[in-house]
Amino acid sequence: MNKEDNLLRYNNLSRVLCRVVMLFSMVLSISMPLSAQPVVDGDVAISDKRAAAVLKLNVAYAAVGVINPQIEFPISRNSSFQTEVVYSPWQSINGHPFHFGIFLNEYRYHIPRTNGLYVGLNGGMMAFKMSKPMLVYRSIVFQNRYCKGYGYMFGAVVGYNWKFARRWMLDLFVGFGYMHSSYNGYSMDDVVDMYPHRPEDKQPTSPDPLNNSAEWLPNKAGISIGFLLFNKE
Image 1 (cartoon, rainbow, N blue to C red):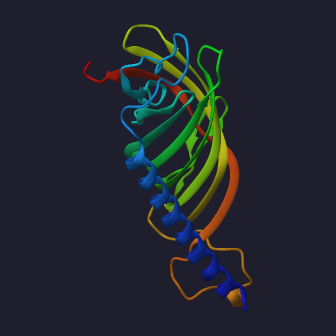
Image 2: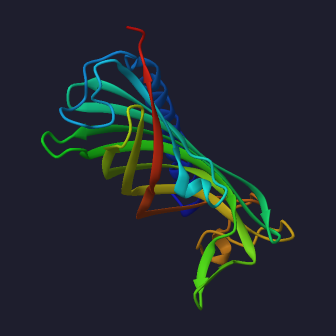
C-alpha cells in the first residue's frame, strides 16, 4: 500500500472519529438531568439545593470578540456536566481570516472541602478558517496565509468556582489536551500552498489534498461569569 492510500485511510479514520465525538457529545448533552443533587458542600456556585443549572459567559474571550457561552448542570453531589460553544465570527482581521467554531462537552469533579476547586475531562470537535497568530516583538501578527479544516480534541481541565452573590459566580479555568486536525493551507489569494510531505512522484491527483497534524496544546482558558438558574419551589 502506497503513501497516498495510507493518507486516504487516515483521513477516513479522522472523519469517523469526528462523527463518534459528535454523537457522544450530543448524547451526553441531552441526557443530563436538569434537577439533581447539590454538587458540593459550602458556598460553591452550584451547591444551592434549588439550583438546576448555571448559565455562563467567558468574559476573557468576549473581551477579544470571541463568543463562549456555557451551561453547567449538576449530576451528583460532587460532579457536574458542562456543554459549551466557542465561536469566533471574525471573517477578517486586517485582511486575515480568524473564523472558527468549537463544540465541547466536559465532566467535572468538584473536590470536597476545597471551597470550589475542581478537575475535569472534556472532548469535542472544531472547524476553522484562520491565519495563524504569532507573537513578534511583543506584538501579535498573523501569517500571510490561512488554513481551513476540521478536527477533534480530548483534554483535561482544572478550575475554581467562586460564588460572590446569591445567583452570581465566577469560574476560573485552564485546560490542556490532544488536538487532531485535518486541513490545508492557502495563500491569501485562495491558492493551495501546502501539500503533504511526499516524494514528487507520489503527489495525489486531488488539487486540494488534506494534511493531518496532531499536537498537545492548551485547549481552553478563561474567566466566566455565571448566573444560577433555579427550580420553582
